[in-house]
Length: 385
Ligand code: KIV
Ligand code: ZN
Image (cartoon, rainbow, N blue to C red; front, side, top):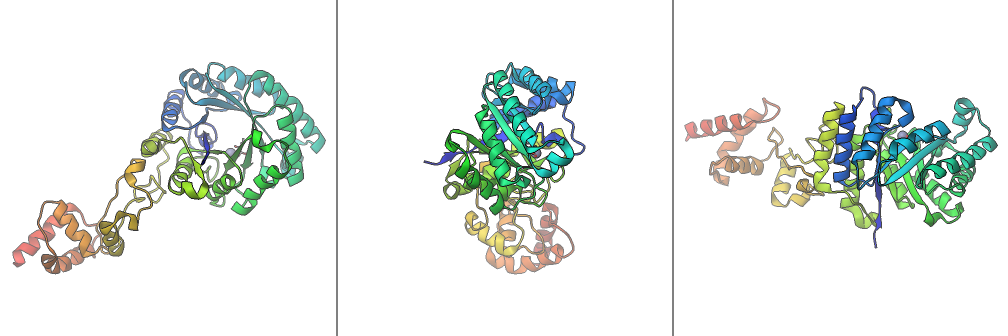
């Protein structure tokens, strides 16, 4: 049986940390509704202690969302924990997400805490959080730069204090996939009752490895992936949940995994976040970029027209997209003939022997050949007959 990978969306929290992104409460509720319909398992609705507006948004989402678990972020500090517990209280399914940075650089320079002080804080404040909300997720921030032995100690302390779910963040996108996977393998080897806990991965894209690291985590025992829609997030962003969902949809047998994501709604989900955030999706973005299912070169267009699977590993319709065969100077006669026939002309291979050089002439002088250009090309051909 395939393992169910749960999706934890943090577009409204980590995603909002993107420079220039500031969702209002109405936008946040609309995104949360779309996330629920898309099929995510957890919505991190915000960081309630951060501002009254953030509190209001988390609370409004907690009142609106019925099926999906709603969570908010708290530092491992009681006033943060109280704010999350209060903000998510109306949600039928709640989780409290609390974190403290465990790596040496954060302990020494940011928190000024010894290892012993940190373990004591984890024991006491995770237990405090547990007294407020039943379902607790604990994140050792900067886990990938934390000493492996201390990471085990911190995680075990959180579990002993009542954490149900442990999230391993690669906070600064530092690890490579082999290293990141090995963190999960090491925890599996040393944490008591590893299988009773839900294990999450939270990856950032500073070295462009957020996606590879998320997939490595799944291969090494993670059953929850944290990320954002369109890869929004601090600095270079978080892993794009759209890419993780597609990878599992296409390579589910390889990863031995499945998700509850409604793949057909993927483009729609991406557009909602694109519009609300004002951050445009790049044309080459996997799955939802304008070029993700476009084929321009002659060899690719010919192969695609013979069998779409020659150059498409998933059907664009399955994620709410469409294939495109833009015509340009690299296009072959098969695609050009196909386009004329789509436009209502009846063009055969013999005619193409004359039409194609006219097409190439036009294509050489422009980026993409438009329908108007195609009509001109046909008129030129006709005058030559
Ligand atoms: O990147 C990170 O470490 C975080 C934590 C708060 C989970 O966003
Ligand atoms: Zn993060």
